[in-house]
Image (cartoon, rainbow, N blue to C red; front, side):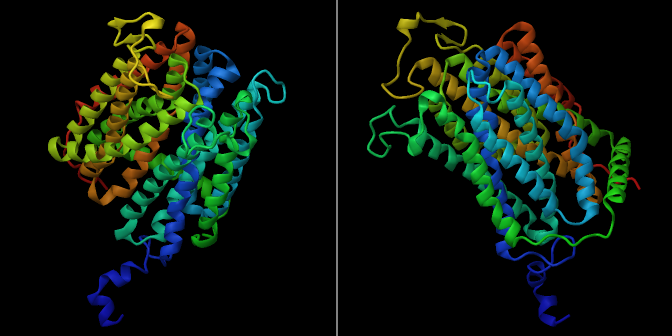
Length: 481
């Protein structure tokens, strides 16, 4: 080793990955992060703002039944993910190459997403059951791409840059989602609805809004976007070499590793209580994101134009959640910051359930022809709509803050020498019960024949998580060998 290498450790950091191998080039690392830009539009366009409300209101034709069906679909996908994802993660660590897995699941995700274009209300070309199967397949494939994509990070990046590169991927994913929402609004929803010079006079590509093509196009656009922007990772990001372990041996060893990690948790009561509490409030937060679009569209009768604007507003303001979460953590500590985020999210959810097209907070009611109007615009122009969107923006900020505070909390209380192992448990706690909240939302929606009742059931998960966090301390655990 030369003297310069000893004196300048940064030179070593730029060439050696966190796992001791050769780090990827800057292009390879950026291409890895760009994969998040490729994946994230699926979440926003399909599972939250555009296709999910279309499935509920148009394909099912009944907002209440649609929300219940979507809950069952999400729950089924969650069960598959909960069972397989932890073991796939362990196999990814032991089996060597990750890119073939990522390619396979990316191909499945793109194919299933593209096929959603063919789901037309009242036509037999694609029965509702087939649409549900496609959505389950796409949801599972999406999560499985994340398992192997995340596993690549320490092999391609120096230790000091892991946090920065991970954050870059998250930022690119959020920004990519915002870009595609803006494009959908400009190209397909606003034409014909407004007379603005910057907006085309008719939807692009000859899209027919009357046949829901401006909504169904979300499937092909997500698929093509994924295919194009995933390519750099496959071309420029190096993969790990084969480990020499057979798939069968890697699977067996992976299962054993997961079981051992869970068993070791009994020695760390405080951390275990935190992970269990997080499991519940995290499920609640995810359910709010999953069903929020369906509930808003069904309650206010919003179409694609409103939902695109809704998604853009939330995406922009959610960025402030990370900053707000950091301020809460610095000011009150991680545990109290999480309690504030859970409480704020829950109160916000309750207030939104008291809103309606002619109702404000369950107190003020207006005849349909006397609803107060704020302005003469294409969306959110009534007072109830504007207040509802404001409340949901506040919820989005608290949810984003809770995600940020949750990672920090584990970093503060997990044993310093077992940090990687406990972040593996952290990932497991995020998927182990991913099916529960969607299942309960679907059950309550169907049982009470009410979208509001389904959304209210999420408060059960938030309450359990909050109560559990009251007994968690900020003390760092001591490693037990």
